[in-house]
Image (cartoon, rainbow, N blue to C red; front, side):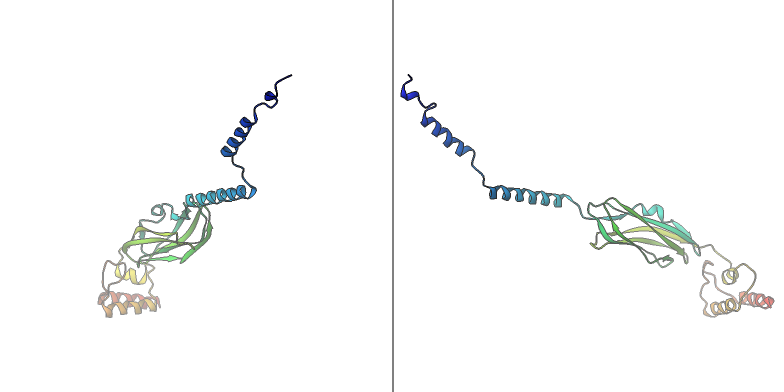
Length: 218
């Protein structure tokens, strides 16, 4: 028969010490504490995601290649402007417009694109008309609901073919209308330069020639 001192193994003092050590090294977590930690981790993850996600940013894709460098006065050109969202978030209420200098006319005034997701592109078509000779900047203006658009400037030159004063006033068909005759007289009386003539003015000789052509129409 074993001595009574070996009836419990390991000795109770050793087991008590072991339990005390375990309690110190591995604290027991309550259910509420676990849920609190879980919520904190989720919120921290959401905050980190928000910090690493960039807002929407709309930019024009190579507008210099889309807009002609030169445009003859009196001619038109179809211009396609492509924009892209280079941000992470989705952009809303995206609008594209062209702001022309005084020697150009643009239609329509703007193009409504609407929503543009991350890395998505959209193309809008405008008609640009050269009104008269000039050189300046055509601006591509991008607007969004959160103001994350911008403006891109493109240099444009409108060239005008130099015409004879009579051709500039009446055309090249050889016929003169009454309105063209009145316009000729108005330019003669005002002394203003006739557009697309390189600064030429209407002389009395021009008036007499146009009157003769007008009479020959009848």
